[in-house]
Structures are given as C-alpha cells and as structure tokens.
Length: 501
Image (cartoon, rainbow, N blue to C red):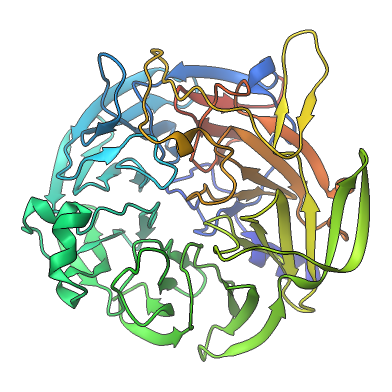
C-alpha cells in the first residue's frame, strides 16, 4: 500500500513526452531512470549537442519525437537587449533542426537577465500542436510541420520582468499569464511609463486559458496572479495553486496564495499571507500545499485553504556543512538568511519532502511535510573541470561567466547576469526522475540527489554534474526528460544526455 501511495505522489505513469516545462504530471516529477552523473564539459554522457541561434531561457519540450525550444533572434554582433524571439523545432533523436518561426514582442528586455527575458516562458505541446509564448506580448500556435494555426498579441504592463509563470497544458487548453487588455499603450512596458497608471485591477496580470485548437479564450482566472509567481497545476485534483506578492510591489492583491479550478478558472479559496513573496512554485499534492513566507515554512490544507502547520526555516534546523574539507552534520543549528526571500522558484514537493535551494549561502534544503523537520546540505558553488586535471571545488564563489552565445557574441547588459545563479535570481526549477532530484543552477551546475535519502547529508548527493565548461556555460532553464534521456539548453546549445549504449 505504501508503494502504491508513493507512485501516486511522484507520478504513476511513465510518459515519453515532456509536453510542458513542469513535465507530464505538471509537478516536475516523473517515474523512470535517467543518467545520475554526467559532464558536458568532458563530453561524458552526451548524445548530441546542437548550437542555438542566441541566448534563451525557456525549457526544452519533447513531444512525439520532436523538440521545441525558444531563443532570442540571432544578432550580427554583441547585443544587450531584444524583443523578437524564435520558436524552433528539432528532431529529438538527432538534434537536427526541422524549422523555426518568429514571434514578435512589444516589450524590449535585456538579454540573458537573471530575472528572465522574453524567452522565459517555455513552449507547450499536446502531441499535434505546439504553442510558443513571447513574454513580451505574443503567442503563436503551430502544427508539427510549422504551419501557423493561430496567434494572440498584447502589451505587457510594467518593466519588471520576473521569471514569471510557465505555460500550463490542461484539458486541451494552454494557460498563460497576461494582462486582460490587448491594446495598452506601449509606453506602459517601461517602469516610468507604467508608474503613473497605479495599481488598478485593469493592469493586473491573470491566468488566461486558450483552446489549443482554435486560440479562443476559454476562461480568465478569478484571482490575480503576480508577475513573480509560478502557478502549478495539480493534475490529480485539477486545481492550480497561484499567488501574488514579491519585490517591486506588484499590484495584484491580497498578497498570498489562491486555489483555482483549472476547468474554469474559478476561485476555490484565497489565503492572504502577510509579507508573502511569490518568488516560488505553487506546489501541492493531493492533500496539502506548501509555501515559504519570510523565514517560516507553512503547510496549507488544500481543501480548506487553512494553515495546518508552521516550521522555522532558520532556528533549530539540521545542517550538514563542509568544515576543513570534510562534511559535518549538526542538529539544533541557526542559519541567517537576510531580508530577501529564502528561495526563488527552486522549490518542489516530492513524496514527504518540500525541497528548495537557499538564497544566502550555498545550501539545498528540505522540510519533512509530516514532522516539520528542516535539513540543509551545503554544496560547492561550482566544480571546475579541465582536461588532464582533477575536479576543483569552489565553495564560496563561482567563476564569472563569459555571457557569450554560440557565435561568440555577448548577449547581456547587466554584470549580475554573470554571477553564480544563487541569491537574487529567478532560478530554474528542479525536476525529479525516479529516485533522483536534479537541481540546476545558472552556471550550468546540476546537483543530483537521492530525494528520499533518510538524512540530507553528503551521502544523499549523488553527483555534481555539469552542462558545460565552468565560466562558459549559462542557463536558466529547467531540465526535461524523455525515453531515458535528459534534455537541456544553455545560452550556447541544445543538449541531449543519455546513458552509454
């Protein structure tokens, strides 16, 4: 019975498609077996790599043997900003490009921003069609031959471009976050242009569900969705956990989380949470949702919307840290996290655990959902791998990134984009394949853990894998999985990782 319950919690059916950023079960979790150790920098486990036209952030989507991914439009030299993005289709077996299409944007963003850019929303595919979203204000749906089926355009409100929502596929619909009007003045895409219009509901962002076949609007969510939030669909209950709140005072209120019916967008309950920052995934299972507010972890009853249990994330916790080159596990510890939200989009519920990556320091944390026990494991910021040399562990600081695309052109305008990907960064979400959790960072590090390890210590850390050479690899994309292979994208390339034949 326990085994059957576990299967329900982590996704009972293995699926060869990864049709949206959060995977076939909508929670970043699938059954299966994937490589637990790999190194693109040493060509270990790499099946193929294909250069991409420019930087991009959305995840790889796999459907019916096709890969879909979006990048910014190619440039003829160094570039700092852009609005036009390119939706591409590849053969999943070989990495060969089959077609590409353009999606214009009404908003210009800085390229490769650690807070997202116009490519941050991943494609979605239902096995016959694919929908690409330019966060700068457009959507286009194509068949698998690249024929355009329908499109929608709008003008985003406000300059601040957090990583935001990942498009959701549900019941033949694609669910995105956008403002309700389609004809706002383009000046509102800048911070200066948006400020005079205030915080009125006319400028809020909401979940919108469009029919994948026709592009017709099916419903708009009753509760607003903040620009920072990553709502997730619980496919077992057909419910979406969405949220509001966070930095730069987003206008949607009240700050906190809501549960929506994924079939019609109706609000089931709203839970105001004082000081809540929605820089996190709207995680849930069949029974509860979990959230982090300040330094406190909350478990919320999914049926009633009431808080069941709270735990301190900073006091009385267990910490496994590196001391003089060795790991030491200590109980009843206190960690200082500062004023920023503890985590940014790196949280995931799997089994009885709520995992996340911390803002301050280099720690992977988890909360046991039944007992409330909080554990942390310190990890190196980066592993430097070069030919004919042993791995070098950098514990407190990563090498600065070159921020160059496959053509060697700079694609950035903010020095913070070249940082480690920890701290103040709209990070990529982890995924789980079978018994392993894969936690990626912006510099191409992938921490692989046994998520159900009895103790979160160095024995739970299976590998510190990589998506490319240290200092030359940049990615804000979650990983994807299909047919025993892991798929990833960096600023420079599309990557397929598999076990040896």
